[in-house]
Length: 153
Image (cartoon, rainbow, N blue to C red; front, side, top):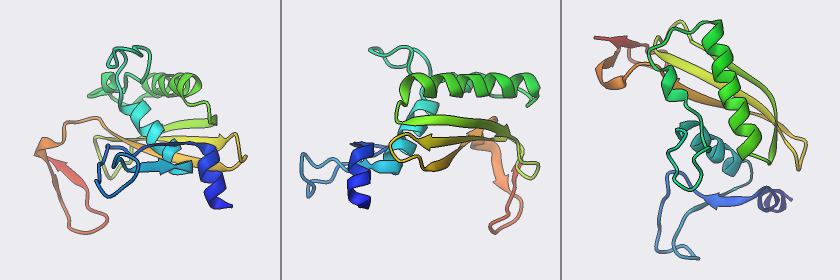
């Protein structure tokens, strides 16, 4: 049953593309089902508008939000960008909610949570996209362990 559901939801290249000569056909690793939907959302949210020559409207301009303070205006704008991109380019899901939060223990990180329902199965899922508002080259961890927080030097 799970294999039938995975094939029904779609199949696509893994992201980032991975090649393995032992795989058939043509050695390309593939993703199916919910994993394929999540990879498609990741590609959609990381692609800038006009980045793809044959599909200039594909993607979001989330990079324009870098270095901007998270306020109501920016949160509303990000929700609109993500919602519009999903509406036009991910037909396998129905968007339920988009939230953008900045964890207080991790400055410079913006978590964009996309709650959706898979149309074919009526199953609810969420996808969290970590968007870094500051360049990560000067970040260091203040504490070792799972609760380590980045510190800007």
